[in-house]
Each structure stands twice: as C-alpha cells, then as structure tokens.
Length: 132
Image 1 (cartoon, rainbow, N blue to C red):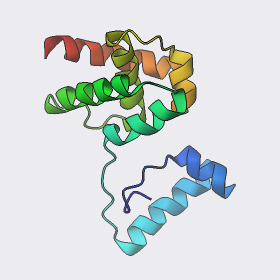
Image 2 (image 1 turned 90 degrees about the vertical axis):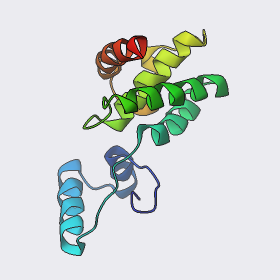
Image 3 (image 1 turned 135 degrees about the vertical axis):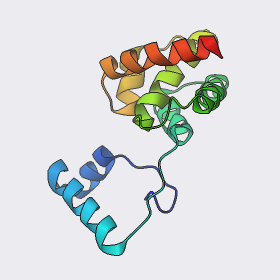
C-alpha cells in the first residue's frame, strides 16, 4: 500500500487479513527485505484527510491541520514520529483554532489510537506551533 501511496495502518491490514499483528509485521519485513523495496515514509498530511473524514471534521479544520503540519515539518518535529499520532494531534489543535468542538476520544477513535497518545503529541506540537 505504501508503494502505491495509499496509507494503511498495520491495524487496518490486520483487520482485513485476519493475521495477528506479530506475524503480519514479520511477513511485512520479510517482503521488504526479500524484494529490496524502498518504502517511502508516510507523511502525516496523508493521514489528516482519513482521520478527519472518519471523525466528521469540517474542511476548514482539515486545511488548518495541514497548515500546522507544514509549519512543524520545517522544524523537524515530524521526523521519526508516528504519522497517525501527529496528524491526530494536529487535527485537535486545528479544531481549537477554528473553534470546532473535537474531543480526544472522537479523534482517537477515528485515528484508531489512544486519547493519551494524542494528548502527549499535542503538548509538544502546540509548543512548536506557538513558536513558529
């Protein structure tokens, strides 16, 4: 999916395939190694649309979240972070900026991650957004 530019999480693949997470990860790594694939890194901006659509977020908030991600990407914050977590935190911050009421629970459910993860990433992301 990554090679074609379609973002799918391991959890998404697990649901569809019925294979447990450990085996799925093992086979994924094996395929990459065997075929010598160069897998592109997932950009959090790709995750924003999927998460926002699942959460029923407005277009204005989506655009604001993408703008936030572009700003923090220049500062190197995104490197090495889980793109889904960063995108979810950006959506939450964007919701505050656009005065759209969004809860950690709603975004977490849409992104398939915990509320705590969003809170932790949001704290660091807000500092960078304020300083940019």
